[in-house]
Image (cartoon, rainbow, N blue to C red; front, side, top):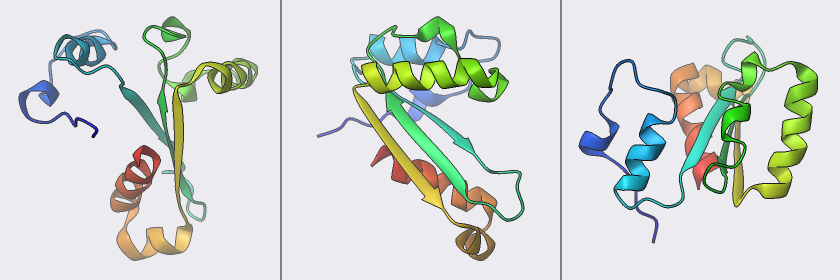
Length: 117
């Protein structure tokens, strides 16, 4: 059964490197940690799409932190590599009609939950 992180492990810690939480979780016995990102919060008529990816420890770690800051050609080459090495990949999509019904914040959370499960 999956072990979920909650409580003090998730408390904000200012001015820490991007891998601070990943290292913290590993030190508390978590072995598989999913990175989650979303796209589509800005468009007025499009879906919100989220992805959750579990990579082997340290795989591709230094190559990206924020996919939105990558050049398109780098993003494309990382996509190929992630497909090759990922232990797990999940996606969640919430269409515009549902976003209008539940709001963008709820839609984003729902897409992320779908990606993880």
